[in-house]
Every structure is written in structure tokens, then in C-alpha cells.
Amino acid sequence: MIEHQGLIVIGENLNATRKIKGSSPRILKDGDKRGLGYTDLSGTKRVLDLTDAFPEDPKEHANAMIPYVGQCFRNKDLKYLETAVHAQLTAGAHIIDLCVDEMSPYPEQRMEWMRWVVTTVQEMTDAVVSIDSSDPLTIEAGLEVHDPKKSRPFINSVNLEEGRNVLHAMAKEYNAYLAGNASGRAGMPYSAQERVDHLTELSKQMDEHGIPMEDRFLDALVFPVGAGPEFGMHYLDAIKQLRATLPDVHLFGGHSNVSFGLPERRILNDAFLILSVLAGCDTLMVDPLMNPPKEYLEFKLAAEALMGKDEYSLNYIAYHRSRKV
Image (cartoon, rainbow, N blue to C red; front, side, top):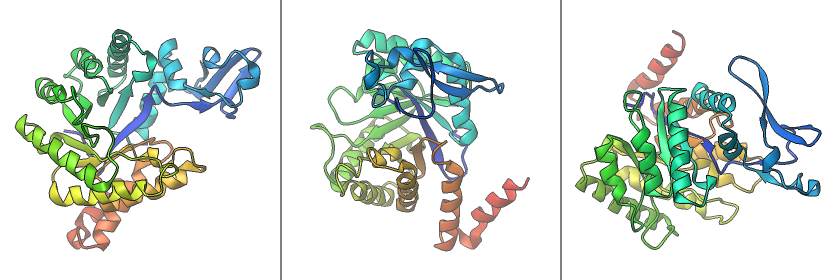
């Protein structure tokens, strides 16, 4: 079982899509070299070399979006990787999400990258790792090398799109937690009701494959509110309905997507995470360094006590007593 006190946290910081702006003050310059400064677990200051990821034309450097996680993988910078893994765990993550889809357009290369990253991260931690890909074969490649003695694997994710349903059988074969997202046969959902309908049907498929309720993680899909003002409420309304009809499943989303393209993202993420917890999410997929999970767990316990969901505030009291031990 994933150990938690009311909220499960999926750390999203090892996705090859993650980027940093070339003008960020975190980028260090040394002649033609460019890198991301960090302090490793021993306290030594180091630099993740990003030189090769910058455009050739220096005039484009400031506005370039640099894929620093992808560069970490390419450089096989184990010190940065280990630092990133343990920083998320220290901040409160229970699951480390691993996605290599942007490493290559070629399936065989993506599969090899997934094998490498799953094996390497499992050498650094016994925590649950999420094998995350839009390609079932890439997920299977990660499952094949995953060490079940360390933890159970987590599959991210199945949906109703053609070819994805093979992941149900993989979850059974490898004793994996299974995430399912609200994408439908024709693509992304456009309303709260479509999210509910798609995930309800997906949950029925999980019934047919014998996936236990406690192993299901349903993702109602968070879209940026900067692209559509109604997107935030689509997600929240879907979560409320799903929590009422599927009380025992885990509900989550890629919560930080909501603020994409907008300033002061931490503030928006913070508000949205609180609204998501109130709507019924028991799982958060976040950057745990930007939005510390402890704050949302404490909010959840306090809210449940105040709304009478935690009778005599027993869970709230137990949590705070445990913090003093």
C-alpha cells in the first residue's frame, strides 16, 4: 500500500517535458557553457550542463525554453537525478512520476529510455514509481525492468482511446496501481459530463479486468484556464460527481496544468489544489517543491473537521499529535 495520511501525492518533476526559460536567474553562465545550478544530497554545489539544449544563436537564448529534465536524462547526470528524486520525497511525494515521451520520436528509443530511467530511479529509492507514457509499449518496457521487491509499479495511464485498453491486463500481470484518464475514443473531453461519462465507462472496464477499487486512480484531466475560463470548473464539477458515484476510487489530475501560461503560477496552483480537495480529490499531482503537500493535507483535515465529516475531529487531532512525536 502507498503510505499516506489522507492525501496521496504524485511528484511530477521527472517528466522530460519540463522546461526552464533561458533567461531564468537559475541558469549559470561560464563562457559558452550554460547550466542549471543545484546542491546535491551531500551539500556539494553542482551544475547540470544544459549547453547542448540551448539554440546555436545566442540572441535566442533568453527566450528559449530549455528541457532540463530531458537534458539530465541525456547526460545521465545521476547526481541531479538523485537530488530531484529525493527533493520530491522530502517535500512529501509518495509516487515519483517518470515520463520520457519527449526524449525521442522513435518508439524503440523511448522504450530504451524508459528502461534506463526506471532501473536508475529504483536504485535511488524504494518509493513507488509511476511509469508514464502515451505509448503502451513504452509502459510495458518500464514494467519489464521494474523491481517489484522495491515497490508496486504505477501505470499512467489507460483511457478509452483505441489501443490503450491493453493496460488493464498489464496492471493485473504486474500487480500495478492503474491510473485512468478522461480522454474518450474521439479525443479530449469538452465538458464536466464528458469527463464523468468517460471515467465511469473506464471504471466499468476496470471492473471487468478485476482491478481493485483501491488500486484505481482516475484523472479527470486539468486544462489551462488561460486557454478556456470554463476549464477549471469542468474539472471540479466532474470530481464532485465522480466522488459521489465512485466513493472508493482515488481521484486526481495534473493540477499544475491549470496555471500554464499565466503569471505567479504558485498562487493559482494553491487555490486550485484547495478547491480540488474540497471537490473530492484525495490524490494530487504537483510539483511538491512549488506547492508543498503538507499544506493541503492540513487544510483537508481541518475542512473535514469543520464540516462534520471528521466526527469529533478525531483525524485532525491524531494528525497533529503525530506531528509532535
